[in-house]
Length: 178
Image (cartoon, helix red, strand yellow):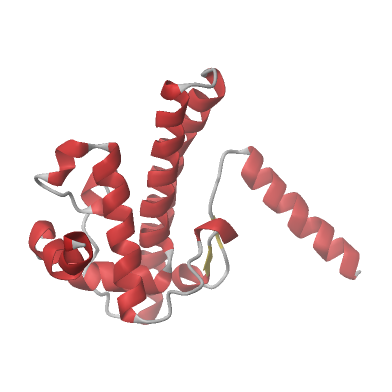
């Protein structure tokens, strides 16, 4: 019986991955997001480490697209995800809205990543393929900020309605001076 459950879980995961899903939303709703192990920053247990995680994601974006250095975008706007819905009256509605928003984020990330993986597969080894691999790495970092529950909470609190450039200078200024 135990093996049947494990086989069912493996089959469901394989089917989801075959369909192109790179991230799975577990039963725990928005707090049960299970990121692939390589995206999880296991050292990110305090606010400083979470802020550093966000800074690293922005640094990767600036390296990939220098035009964003002058006017850094909010990651949600970059993915074209609508603003966070207002808190609902009941917890059930609020949790379902958060789950729907996470699914939307995962779908947008999956759309971007799918194109990049197909492009990488089609290119021979060389500088153009390296650029695509760099883009994949950058979007993985952005995805890890938006999908990791603690990093997402810090990101939404700091960048929610504030100017991204000002918050980045406050959050990452010391790091960038070095």
